[in-house]
Every structure is written in structure tokens, then in C-alpha cells.
Image (cartoon, rainbow, N blue to C red; front, side, top):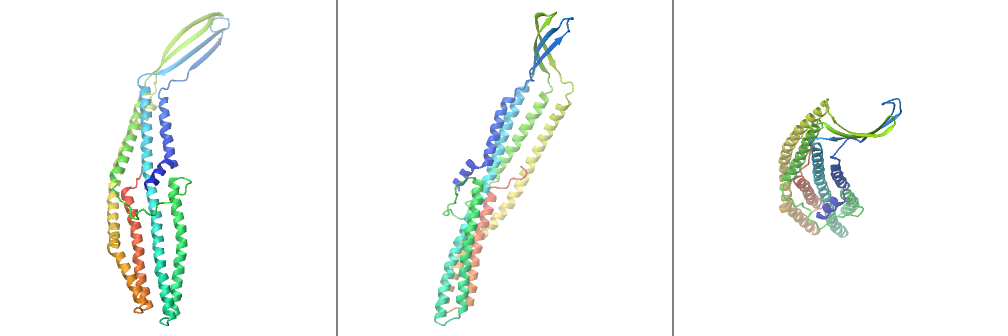
Length: 372
């Protein structure tokens, strides 16, 4: 299980995409300093006298105040947000791998039960054939036993396909061309470590708080864009075709109509409030979900404990007693079949109880993240 999760975190394409997003946001830190494009202008004509003169000018505007600092801080927060988003993706993928892993083990447990049933009915067939040969019973018992053995053999072939499907589902999340097969020696019961609500709460809180930090920096960045820009320039020209006359220019770009950035700053403030409300909603939803999951887990745990402590023992006792009584001629065919079906039904319920317990335990360990 640990190896499967390790392979997933190194191979999964979604996580690799998340790494690229972090790398991209880190590279974008270099865009914090954003001067305007260099302006180069040529003027030719009779702008000084009747003579044809030339003028070449170069001008560059630079942001003033803390614009560059705020832009850099915003980009740093965006890189951190990408990391938080990756952490949520890793959490969800780990849950998916765990579910797929134990789905395969469920197939293994069904296969083991099928093997056990095959042994039971093979023994039944031998006893039926012996009773028929000695004249103690009719041919109907032999036919019935043969039909059941063939049915179980058919189910065995079908289970092989089920296991192949479960294996491919696991391999889908690990995303490798290697033929990944879960260790069949792994205990069929999922080892629940602790309720996962604290872990997912931390992930969600970190994500939304980081989102709030991004919107706070966006708000500051939009406000900073309302500050003037300083322009420096140089010009060289001819006068009456005589050269070279040159000089420097300086100026300011003043945003007289700053309503756009003001509106964007207010929108960022609204986004901060939205993220806080989303965080509050997620915490409430998670708490209610965890209570529901815990109750369901306790129910599945109770059922599993019954089968482990009593149910399976009853099933084995019924099978052993019925087999001996039928072999000795102390039990009729119909009574034997009835008791056998009862015991087999208990064993099937035990397999399903383990599967339901595992599904519930994984949900408790990894509560579903909603609306993230």
C-alpha cells in the first residue's frame, strides 16, 4: 500500500501538472518589475525653419512607489497557492489509490471464498456419487452437485476478469506501464489510523487562507497602479540642418481616471470575503460529514466484529456438521443443501462486511473534499 502511494505521487500526471504550475508561478516572480515599453520616435521636416531637420527622441517610463514590491509579493503568494492546490490534489489521489487497492483485495477475498466453495461442493459431489453407487440416494443429488461445481468454476473464471479490472483501476491512478499487482498477503481489513478530519481541515484551511492572501495582494497591487509613473528621456536634433543639438526630458504619467483599478481593488476585497465564507462553509460541511461517516463506520465495524467473532465460526460448524451427517446418511439431501446454503450465505456476508468496513474506514480516513 505504501509503495503504491509512493509510486502514485511520483508518477501521477495530475501531480506533475501541479508541479509545473508551481514552477510557472515561481518563474513569474521575475515579472514583478513592469516598466512601460521603451518609446523611440523620429521626427523629420520643417519644424524649425524652411530647412529639413531631424529629431530623434527616446523615452522610458518607470513605476513609482511600491508597485514592484507588491507585484513580487503577489506572485509569491500565487506560487504558494499552487503548492496548496497540489496538496489537495495529492490528498484526493491518495484516497483514490487506497480505495482502488482495497477494491482489488476485495476481489481477492471473493476469489478465496470461491476456492473454498469449490472444495465444499467437490466434497459434496464425491459423497453424492458414493451414495448413488450404494443406492442410498437418487441421481438428482449427483446432477445437482455437478451443476454447482460447474457454476463455481464459471464464477472463478469471471472473478479473474474482475481482478483484472480492479488492477487496471489501481494502475490508472498510479499511471505507469508497469503491471502493478497489490500484495495479496496484505490483511484484508483496512488499518484505520485515525479520523482524517483534522488532516483535511488543515489542508482546506491552508488553501483558503492562502487564497485570501492572494486576494489581499491583488487588492494592494490594484491600488498601487493608481500611482504616477516617472518618465525619463533623451533627444537629439538638427536646427537649420546644423547638428548636433541634444537634451533630456522628464515627466510624469498621472492616472486621472483611476476608476478601473479602484473597482478591481474593491472586487478583490469581495473575493476575500467570499473565500472566508467558503472556508466557514467547508468546515461546517466537513464536521457534519465526519459525524455521518463515523456513525456509518461504527455500524460497519459492528457487523464485521460479529462475523469475525461468531458468524464465521457458526458457518464452519454448520458446514462440518452437515458434511459429516450427510456422509453418514443421517441427513437428507434437501436438509444438507439448506444448511449448506445457510453457511455459504454467512461467508458471503462476511466478505461483504469486510468490504463495506474498508470502504467506510477509508472514507473516515479521507473525508471527501467538497467545493474546493
